Length: 268
Image (cartoon, rainbow, N blue to C red; front, side, top):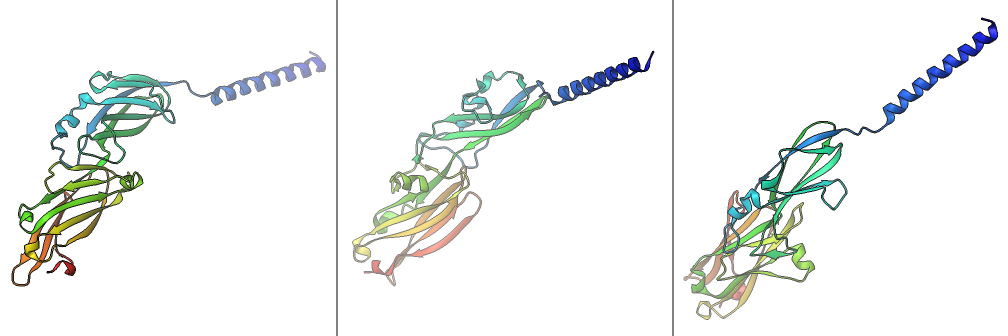
């Protein structure tokens, strides 16, 4: 073989090697079209007891009432949607990032006594493997309650509590606990928590001094799925005519008792 032929053969071999290397590199850069199986489950977690006239926790603890969705991250429409009882054993899905969402109830913008909305969201990824994903569902509202001692009627002709949250204030709405109420309020609060104000209103009876009205404000930082209860009892000293009340604050963890004196202008 002459030198010219040898040179041509060498050039051809080098070109072949370059093509092979280029082909392998291109294959490595191609996105994977792999799949994996997703196995779903959910839990319902409520830190406060829900049992009132129109809202019963047992209903919201029934998993079969929940809708379960899988959404592609960044999308609004679900890729898959099931009632909990109809969830398949496993779902084959393309590699990618997804959201598992489960929910039940009726959502509201400010407050409600008849509805509760429970929701859970969990991000997960499929990477050519099997994924077992569990989402925990919790109430999106906080619970607010008041317990007026029956003896309040002895000293006050009227009394009530009004609540203020960011959502209520934005819509110029009110949530009022009247003296004869029993059903708790479920208040829409920010996910990160917010300061909720409770204003206690009183009108004193004339036999305990000149008829006068007044208010006392209490605030508390509330998160969704947390509760705040005010237990209010009157405190009257016949010797001085001083009328006040004791407030016990129940945050579902610890009780804090404090004595509040009615403002001096209430004294007859």
